[in-house]
Image (cartoon, rainbow, N blue to C red; front, side, top):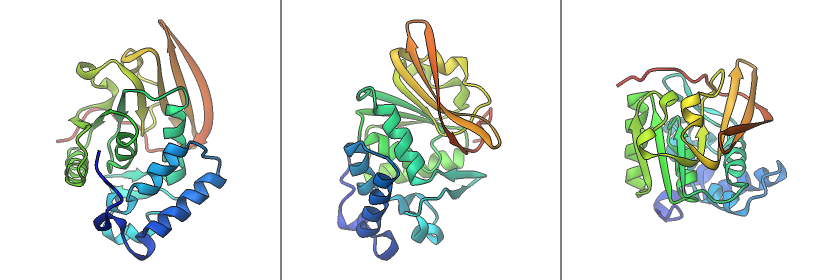
Length: 224
């Protein structure tokens, strides 16, 4: 895993480590308790994952545009989803559906041994891969494809995380969970979305509805 605390990545002013630390204090007050998640959120230079013009806003608790109609989720949502995914123990591999800017993958890759990430928009996938490879991640694998299909060849997975909202969770993704594995996804349309945690118990999938959220819709197909 790369060292994300080096001077070249630390930023200055509104992108400095001090600003990151203030973000983490805010996450604590919002209820994030996992010490490992908080440590990684403090170490990860979120300003690298947005356009340079938005870098000074990178540590605000707000979603930011990354182009192609997609967004980088607010820090609280990233921390909350990561904490939920890890609450039953540390998975050895995570499948992420929706690479986007690569920020969520970067957070996960500092916590788990292997991250597999699927993106449907070629330009976003290429940009995220260049950034993450350049920073030094070697435990993330990338695929350009329709996220509804998952990544069967690398599965099954102990954890699956979706960063876009389907109307309902694709059966193909549920089938790529290991027994005891968990899938976390925003589900619904428009303003009627909630995080849903699905745990696989044999061939039974137990659903738990959690926080109200707002994500871009999950779309089919892929664009080179």
